[in-house]
Length: 175
Length: 281
Image (tube, rainbow over all chains, first blue to last red; front, side, top):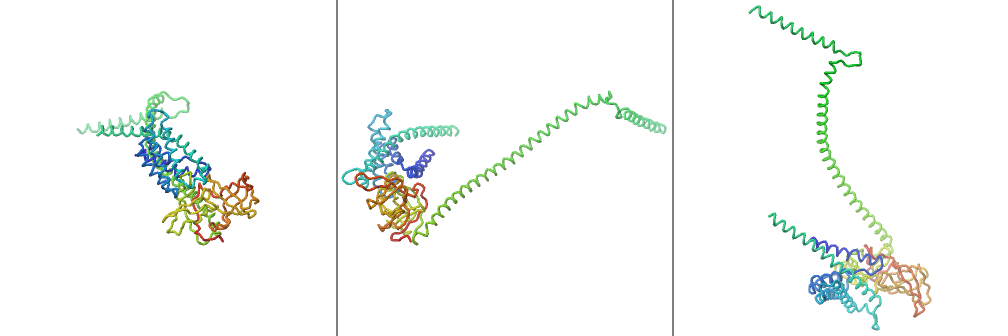
């Protein structure tokens, strides 16, 4: 419970508070924590849970952005689902597995964003180069950050869960 | 029987006299002498009395220490209480200080807004930024005013330092403003230095680009841009930004400038919404 409270607080503080400010102050593309979270949930909990969480986070992000609930919901759903789906079809023990799954999830998400956002496509069938650049940078962020998040979450979770089980055993013994 | 009583009285008298005599003799013998040396009797007395004095002194010291320990613990309790009270006081003063600093910053911003206020039309709505868009694709923010406050789609949003953007979507109690740096946002501007008319468009990376309508128009780095009001969307005279770089477009002879907006979108807090159709005096 404590772990999840801390994780949710940290996520919203970073995603809604810190990173948008960094983006406008430094004029740069910042990591999209919503995509990274969808990919992490897909990797840890499977494609279905990844899709559900992705849809919820996408709708929330869309409501903050103000215009494109469906676009954000759809793309984050695709990210969570595809990351979980890729995990089920890739060798689990291989060290590259989280990177590959993050790449698949993020790439599917960005392609969905580009395909469902007509305002980002220039006429005459040419893609907006800056939009493609943003998509590539977001993908790079997701591929590099999501495996680290997975690793950190697993370690923290094991530490907290072991502590909880020990406390439970101790309370049973005392009772 | 009558002869025994006077004898006993007589013996008592001699006994009392003997004791007084011995006492007087001792007193005369042990009187303070002019010599620096102590007498043997005095030495014996000193030998007997000294250890007793030392023991009593030690006991007195020990008692004093015990009393000191009790006093110290009592004082420590007092000091601890006092320390706790002082820490609490420091915490209160620090939080008060932080609050005052926040008020000071808010006061500064509001004063700047008030300086802008005389230029604004009578009908304007003060609003606060609730959230800034957490996406790299769209530059927007959510404000805490909506349809029930009189806000409508297309209203212009300004801050104390300049133009913020345009209301894109509204709900009953909130609205979404599209920043001027977004790629879908365009503003008609005028160069403050020479009055040349141009068009500013968001680049999507926190900056804008400007092109003048006249291909031979004079545009320099450092030029300040204000809204022209020709598009009948934005009121006239609102500061937009400053040209930081000018370059020639290869395909045509026109020049393009990169504009740094006056508004710091990362730290935007209070804004004014100008309803459509209202012009700056």
